Image 1 (cartoon, one colour):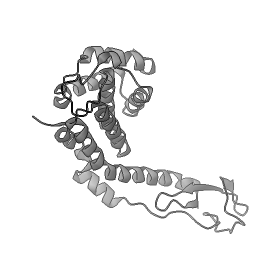
Image 2 (cartoon, one colour; image 1 turned 180 degrees about the vertical axis):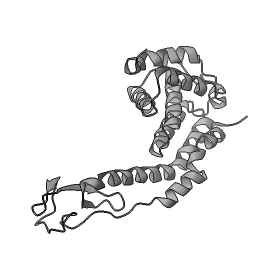
Image 3 (spheres, rainbow, N blue to C red; image 1 turned 180 degrees about the horizontal axis):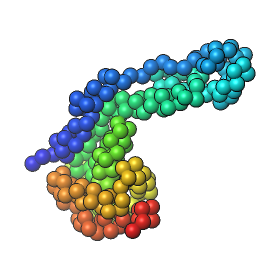
Amino acid sequence: MASAFDFLKKLFAGAENAQDKNKLADDKLVKFGNVDPMCPHCGFKLPTMPKARRKCPQCKNPILLKTRPADRKKVLIKEEERAFAEEQWRLYYAIEAKKAYPEIINRLQEAESDYNWGLYRNAKFELSQNSHRRGNPQEALELMLEVCYLDLNGPRNLSGNKSMKSFSVHEGFLADGVLDRIIRYGKELSFTLDDIGNCFSMVADKDDVRRIRLPLGPDKAWSKISEEIEPYYGA
C-alpha cells in the first residue's frame, strides 16, 4: 500500500524534476541596483539615501527604493526595473521553498505514522504553500482542497494510539485562511466553481485520501465548501 510520503513525492515531482532544476540553475539571485545614494538614471549623487520613492533633483526621473533578496540591502532602482526586482523575490521564495520541501515531507510522514492527523493536516497546508511559492498553483489548490476536506472531518492527534477515533465530524470546521487560499489559487488559474468542484472530486478520489477513510463523504464535504466560496465565483 502506497504511503502519503510516496504519493507526495510523485505529486511534488516538480520540486525535483529537471525543469525546476534547470530553472534554478539558469536563474539566480543577483545584486542589482545602487547601494549608494546615486540616481540610477543619471548617476547624480544624492546627499542621503532616500527613505521612499522620489524624483532625482538632477534628471527628474523617479527613483525607487527596494530591498534586494540577494543580500537584503536597500537599493535604488529605475521604475522599469521594478518587475525585475519582483521577479527576484519570486525566485528567492521558490529557492527557499525547495529547501524546505524535504523537511515538510519528513514531518508529514512522521505525523501519519503516529496517527497525528491534525499535524498531518498542518503539513499538507505547508506543502500547499510550498507548492505555490514554487510557482505551482494547480498543486497548491489540490493540496489546499485536501486540507479543507481534512478540516471538515475533524482531524485528531492520537500519538500512536490506534484504538481512538482518528476523526470526529462534529469537531469539523472550515478555516477562513484555507478558504481564502482556495479562492485565490482558483482565480489565479482562471477556474470556475465547477472547475474547482472537479478538482476537489479528483483530490477526494486519490489513493492516499481514500485510504484514510474519512467519515464525511466527498459530496457532503463539497456541498459545505462550495456554499462558502460560491459568492466569489457565481453559480
